[in-house]
Image (cartoon, rainbow, N blue to C red; front, side):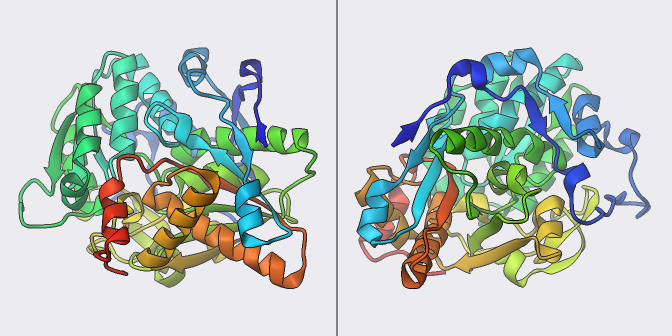
Length: 416
């Protein structure tokens, strides 16, 4: 069962989670003064359009028509009933996934890359810098920048730069300049925190350049809510009132926020984050103020963190190798509105291969984490004899991650 929305039903406004949060959010702090930051403090990095969205208390924020024109290249995305996986598991649960792999970059990331490029271009910025873990965000921003005739330099975590050469080629095809990070230590495997430092250092050194972040910040999760908003309409078309549980993989939190936040106001819906056991930010991290980057150049945010100097193992799910998490996601976990689970790499690839054989779609390693959680939810429903409706975000395909599957299938995968 594939549920499609017509193009004219694409969401025209983003859902803003901030005014609906069950707890008060702590303000970000200036890295130098440790006082709450203001718009002028963020101006060297971000355009005012995004800064306003970062702190907005409006429940809905209109999507510019110029952004919708590009989003319509692939949105609305399909909602798919995973009936073959249900049969393979023998579960009474009904499993639905939002297929974000149909975007030009093959993941959910263009949902925020396009508006970020748009707001920067509208302010006269012609060059962006960014970091990327697995390469999905760098790919999405390269695609977005070429739509607005902008330059972009991508600092790619060195472990992924070496593991995933074809993502580098795709970024370069869309005009991106890609370098491994950290730039000053060729022997270091890198981390997202180090890559953020490299990208921020570059951005603040030039007047024509801003920095773009692919996850964590409020405006990024805002842009991703098109996923959950479409899913609400599609579930209704499928005859489902509401899901019992919404699940997403979590590195920084944008994909998870995109599918889950529109359902947050409904207390009957469980929200679940799935993360890697080798980078267990939500399940083992400390809820505290910390820098978003390793060098301590970014504002401090209250979030779950493993410490800005934490360097996770070189697992294949590079998009989940981040020491911190979105303040919104962190606050939801801390207050008990959202649950979090962590899985080792081997179990996620086991689930990904099972999904590929049942549904015919090869998941990105990041998506393997959410599929593992979904399978566990479906098996729990089977054990209890419950008709549970499970919704998850299939955040990206694994066509450029075949080296990871080669490692798994040939016994070379380290079960970190």
